[in-house]
Image (cartoon, rainbow, N blue to C red; front, side, top):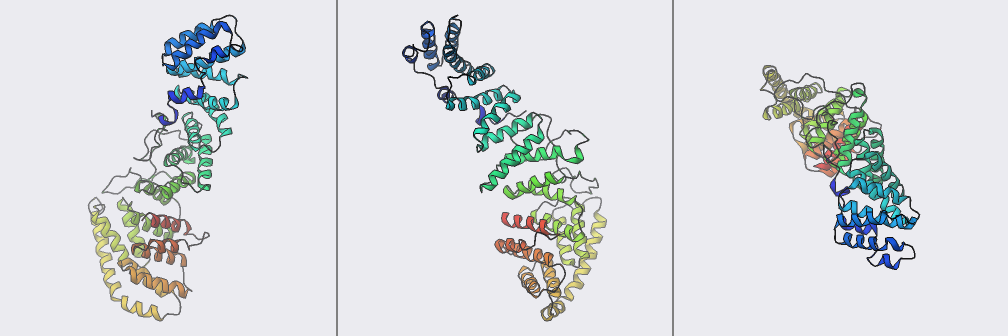
Length: 461
């Protein structure tokens, strides 16, 4: 089991001494009006030993003072402070935490000390893995310090390790919201932990119990995962065999899990996160045109991994009248040795040959289509021409035709035309224009989500 990040909780003795606000060696003698004379000397000796890091000797002298039968409340307060320092120096963090709890009830503690000791108590209990008490004291401290993002993240970790998944998710959700509102980027480990929790809480697993397994490589939140509680990988994230058909239906990701993956892609774009997100989205019900736009994105991002995905995209491109794009898709699959090498090789070879014939016919009619499009009063022919050029990889011609068609208007599917234009800009190394074009797809559109993802992909490029 990985520990909570040591940088947050390991006791630093220099900091500890400062937080204890230990009195100077001479203070006990000068403070005889408060500290009983009988315990002044052993406390002075204990303090000297603490300054020299002689923890055992210090503890022995503190116990001598504590054994005195005649002590005032203030005497006990000073004794407890030195107990806390000695136990911490010995790395007996459980004993030190128990002393801090007593100190927090003392009327002699200043507000600043009480604030410091509350945090120290939480940290000490974390060291001994008493997550219940650590959580309690950390929550008390955070009430006075709601803007401390690091300690809020530690609270979420504690809640997660205690199995309080919904509370941990609530803590992280608010942490991410506040961070985004401030114009900052949430930390990657926060989002990884949110992913783990969302996966655990997904509806389709609630009746099956927590499943063993590991998240895909690079998806583990560092220092946050308790042993045996890792989620299995989401669909498409490394579980499929390569070079053959994968007919197993992947588990469906719920909306909360996909939402977290979208944030990971937004802030920390990587093939790993893209594959998890896009594979999850593929399990949703959608129209053929929406699936076509999503599959185009999967190919462009570089996370198309299975024969079925290449065949599906090629078939969709062919069905929509873009055989050249279908051919380019298949060529990429063959080049990557994902298709044309497995059990489906004969079928894939026949599909490739069939599409090649359609491309020859399409090329023969391209000049006539261009002439017709330029003279057409509406934009449909221009959009069809632009999509055709896009399939051939002739991006300047695609941009010209699609832009002309969109300006003419009066045609079907203006949102998919904008996506096609954005793709053409992106492949022409005009990422800014690509993003601006994708962002013109309205929120109410069926294609809004995929357009937003295309825009994120353009930002990454």
